[in-house]
Length: 398
Ligand SMILES: [Zn+2]
Image (cartoon, rainbow, N blue to C red; front, side, top):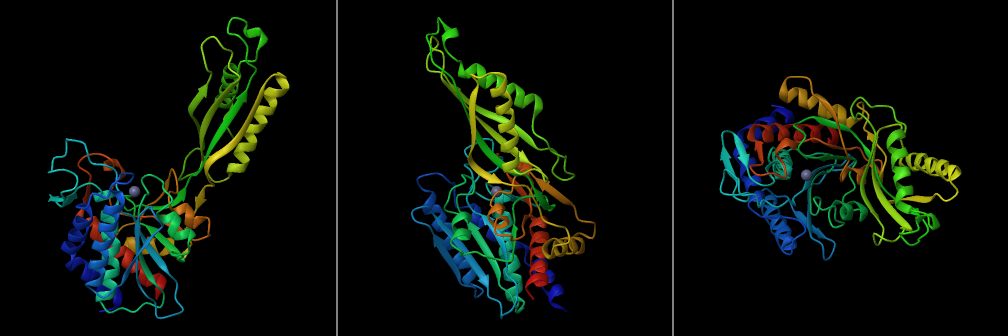
């Protein structure tokens, strides 16, 4: 038997072990943004340290004080190979809904070939599949040239700085390739929309509400700008995987009292971009509309700036080693053509994209069931994911 056959067979024979690991992770209520979050992150990390130790892998905890406890484990390479990291977040959203058909979100339940519990799909099932990929390679006695890493992080659900941000920016995780095992229904997500959150400040001149002609109404001018933005939008060419670029005005704030002409109105725009657009380009297009309105009316004054989150759209070429390997291994495991897809945002993957590292989402479970009661993942899919992750590690790290 060659190495590939060995890991496939090992994983096929150890499906129960994937369910056991996923269940162990699910039973710890690692909800982000709570007083006890750190305590539960620590429990998740300790659980994984113990489980990795059982088959001879040392896992390390990494925390940026006071935020939380991440975990990195690896099969160290023998030299001169590439590093593949795989994993994702072990924080979850709350499971307070009372319509769980099981005994609640944190009591993992196996039923009809599914594992049910908070985080089953988002994304403790995916983490268990990654864990099993490393375990299969190690237990089959395979010695890769490059490192094969497992990474589990905190605070993804709340976009905090203590998770993947910290690991990547501190250089603790710096692979050549990254597989984020988020729930994609095993579609290989190679295209990611860019995103920029922008804030517009429209300035006016205050006056008494009974004599509006003496002032300049910032709310009225904001309405003019919003209308023009909405009518015109920004330029983009629809992408075959990502669809259209978009702008959404999600918040507006202005005025101090009903009888005062408001001198300021601010609103926020969530821009999502497709290849061909850049966040710098989009903000320039919006500035052009502001200039146009200023020329039409000398009292029109507005400025726009980014408030957070700037990324351009990313498409990982389908001839990159990571994508090629996932496509061929998916076809080997599923015996049918694999599907490529796009997603509304890159999430933590953008940290890798900024460093030029191909990083993509590919994992078990469906978006349809997450952040709701009765979250589930198919157990066969966990095993299929583990096989494809392991085979991909053999392709990229040997
Ligand atoms: Zn997730």
